[in-house]
Image (tube, rainbow, N blue to C red; front, side):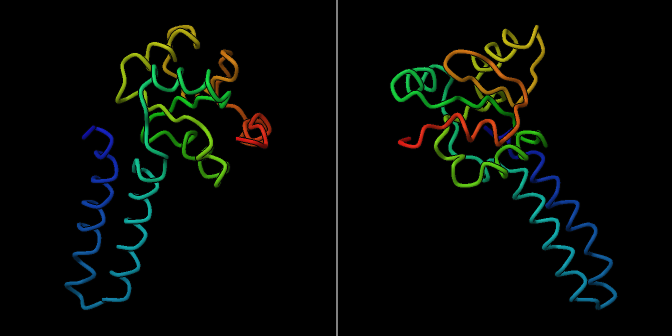
Length: 145
């Protein structure tokens, strides 16, 4: 769980070091702006952007029940972030599984990608799709889900 926060924490710490000289010079507006940028980057790389992650087994069970796709992702992955942001509000209608938190999920991704942990991997009706276009994923969501 704490591994997911390494990159966001690094952004905040780097932001603090980057703004310290600006504060020492009395350039408060520039320091505040730079701090805002680093906090935004930290937020984008944090687990807060993604819906709450569930286990691979739970996602499989839920997907079988409601037919929604499963997205296997990893914190810090820019392609996962692109998928999540481009899906917008419809992203909450998918089952999100963080492979960094669930070894079984990482095994599913490796099995789907010839031994590589390539994310995002989206499972639709039991078939894996590696790094699909967000519009394609959105089209796979039924209107009732």
